[in-house]
Amino acid sequence: MITPLVPVTEPDLRGRERQYVNEALDEGWISSSGRFIDRFEREFAAYCGVKHAIACCNGTVALHLILATLGIGPGDEVLVPSFTYIASANAVTYTGATPVLVESDPTTWNLDPERLEEALTPRCKALIAVHLYGRPCAMPALRAFAARHGLHLIEDAAEAHGATIGGRKAGAWGLAAAFSFFGNKLVTTGEGGMVTTDDDLLAEQLRLYKGQGMDPERRYWFSVVGYNYRMTNLAAAIGCAQLERVDQLLEQRLRIAGAYRERLLPYADRFGWQLASEDPESRHVHWLFSLRVPGRHRDPLMAFLRERGIDSRPFFHALHTLPVYQDGRFHGHRRLDHARLLGETGLNLPTYSRLDEHTIDRITAAMVEYFAPHTTVRG
Ligand SMILES: *Cc1c(COP(=O)(O)O)cnc(C)c1O
Image (cartoon, rainbow, N blue to C red):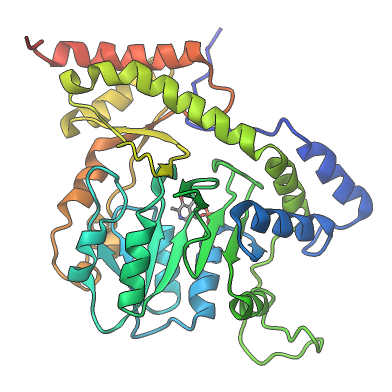
């Protein structure tokens, strides 16, 4: 018998997902209106503690929708961490504006608030704070910076459903935030996204641009060029079922992260592993459990795990190392070594609800097995 590969993620659809999708099908509401859309938006807004949530078809367009609605375009610049998933920067590029890449903090792995100033120019209009792998950014510092320089603060919360900073949810700190509900995210709708905001006027404009720009009072009357970024009621049906169990989904992530930490920390010094730093002020939701290892060992370790039936993922490449964003205008020839090193040294281990302790034992034992011959035992 072939043992299946332990995956990095899998969706947890053990609630009412199937029931709600069937209800939507039975009722004939399969497109972009319907009760599940309304309910999902209302409940997601309440969950995040914001006034408005606007559903869209994925996280990338949620980001683009925010930027486009704010009127960001050619000639503008937007600060984005270099170490992030590419969608954070691509959404800026779609508007014709330039993403300007910022250095990361080597311990939090998020953008370093101390390194924003050096990237700032008079053309900067916005700052995108990405809560990477579920760890929330230092939002109070980023908020202060954005306010001081008149920047729109936008959160990319695609990986951070339920994360909190000082008790306040990710998605409730910026002028607006984008979430993703892709199949591997903490809360999923298959493909899907959401924009959250407390700003009434912005919410109205976001809805206008999301729905092709059609005047809500006058059918087929268009005064702006909008987009079709709508979510389907079928996707929202899945989202409603996921939200009913969001606390359980988060508990599983915390359980898994705790189990990994317990098993990996005793070896961290000896093997040169770096786990995410702990911050008592915030709740890290561990979308994917992550760690850094000495760079030369990262890819061989992943190959070794794979031979033992365990899948893993490398960290994202820092954007300034990629062909699309290596040009000097994206990073002003700043070195951004921490961002680059993160991309070269990090990996994500399997993180999904059904992952049991026995499998975590197997994974961590394989890591120790790989590293043992590569170190001289000290002391
Ligand atoms: C997943 C993700 C996105 C994009 O979401 P999609 O739904 O895949 O378009 C954006 N930013 C980050 C940080 C992500 O992880």
